[in-house]
Image (cartoon, rainbow, N blue to C red; front, side, top):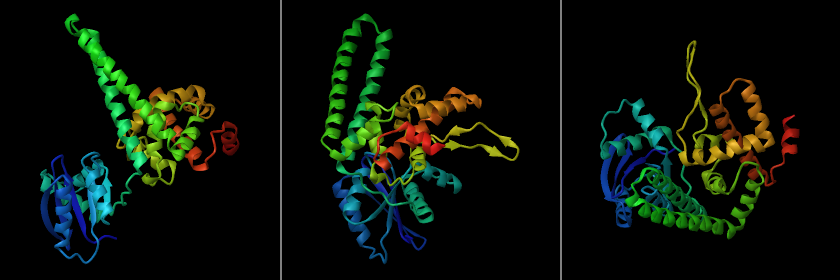
Length: 323
């Protein structure tokens, strides 16, 4: 158990840190660049700490990863925490102050109280895959926005929109090819892709995201953890005799939820295991949206099992183990 914690509130150009030791706070801020990272470590060393601190920060993607990488390389213990967990902890404290300094102190208290798990840096190939999939999602969003504009655009600007759409389409093709090449050139990723391709409903557009979600650096030991990571775990609402509608938690990765939706609908029709599962849910009165979410969860369980076993999807095996 870590007795000394450091909370880091990180932004684009700077980050605030709070060292919490023996119920006392020490605060400072640094520039969010390599010079700032080195100054941060030098500042920690001035305290001659009697034990290694746990350095905790919110998982804010591009802003937090460079610092987290730098700290791990230099031998520090780092936790990257879902911002929703920090926010829930703040509410539990009835916290009302919202400043960078206050947030750093809050994160330090969260780390001390909750002792979150340590972050493992993703392998280089997974990091590149993450960058490519994020870029692809951004390009697809731009493409959809421009298509929407084209529907109501004045004739004087349609050529401009079409030119931009052509450029975006070319970039989308290039990124998809880069993703394919990256997987092809990595034997482990290529093998895992083959296993995922054996599952009816899962196609090329989804596989890269699943390879990231199921990467060993995530540390998932069972499919339920991946379901929670995707924000697909049911959130029960019940008090006394009252029961509200059960909805998915949505406190996980929104992109993963998004890319699983169409595969789940496809699997509903073409994957015999998920088809039968959805038929049972429909017979029990579940609506289409609830069934689709359940199919997404089922698809994660199947993908986890296939990757863990190293064997392609076999519906006959699944049926025999079920019965």
